[in-house]
Image (cartoon, rainbow, N blue to C red; front, side):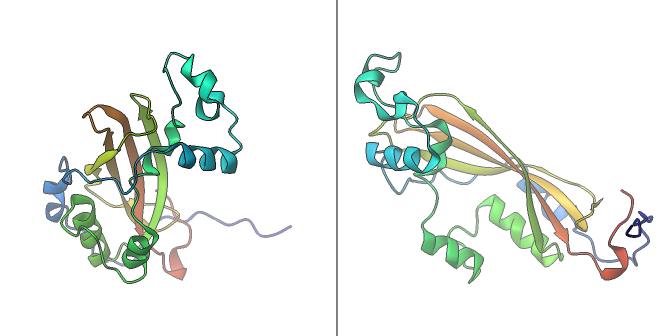
Length: 201
């Protein structure tokens, strides 16, 4: 049998930590409302359902949906970000060339500070979406993005020394009706040195 690894107490040399005062004012701040890149369409809904193997007739059967409580076809709620996510070019600029579309948004200002402090590892830990109203073909879905929580101190995780923060999305249609509220919890961490692979905390 292989050797059982022992979980050792954390005893790494002191290292620079994120100064919470540099990011504290970002908690509760939101970006301006961002415009969608596409209008909700039946074709997008059909493509999503084909890929996801979702046979719900509310999303695919016009006649069935017309006779439902919604009075017409609706989109799968989980598609809420499909019409507002940035383009592939925007994503490549952000993650490859480190060019942000909206550098002054609170989430991007937070990212700038944690990277400067050495927390270069990123792990999504949880996402919760609360659906408030149906999305229908012809709708346009706008969103705001903010920061609701930031760890005030380091956490000693198996990924490395890290901080947790919570991003919040609010999605509204063209009538100002909220269709979804989403929280996204992230761990940013310093990739551990070889001498501290496992430790308590």
